[in-house]
Image (tube, rainbow, N blue to C red):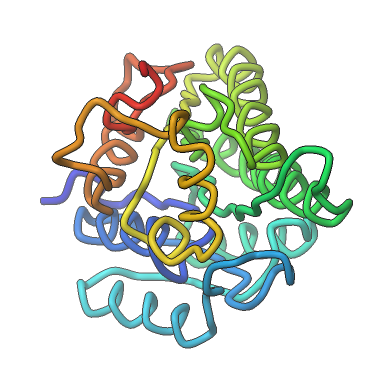
Length: 266
């Protein structure tokens, strides 16, 4: 028996990293997965490797290998019609929708006054507007299911403590907190819970393969310390543990769950 037997989860950004791990963990606990990923370059200003169609195919293979059922498509969170159709098709295939994990996001680097218009608007459009479109596309199906359910939004420690050289990223992640708090108040009476997760460094290509990160750390390192020097990077399971907990914790809503090695307290 799995913790999520018979339930259905919609996850954005599933091609690799956190999203893939969330999909695998839910599948191992009996859930069916509806997932999407852009699986390709988002913007030229990103300085870490983009996910690929091969990555997305590998997520599907791993979920099915784990005994899970999955409907996964390549698409952009900024495309509302795409998300609405995917959710509708997933509900038709699996019968319901119980949980939403809004995970997709991008990062760019630059001083506030030196960012290009694209660097600012692309990040806000993907991280904040795209997440709102995820909620718009998927919340009605959760309400139609009538099983309670949950929404978990992946924000960042940069949404709790603004970071230098990350103006667009910090702005988008702070915005997700406001979006989540509003949705939590609206959905509480309908027995749907909404929470945010706030990671610091995570063992993903965005977290470890960004060529701009070290340059930023060298110049602004005073703003990037944590309280756990012996554990500088969170594992994928550290994040998935939180997501699965928040998806099942019936007394928790409006929470801002930090997995930041104490960085927000420094």
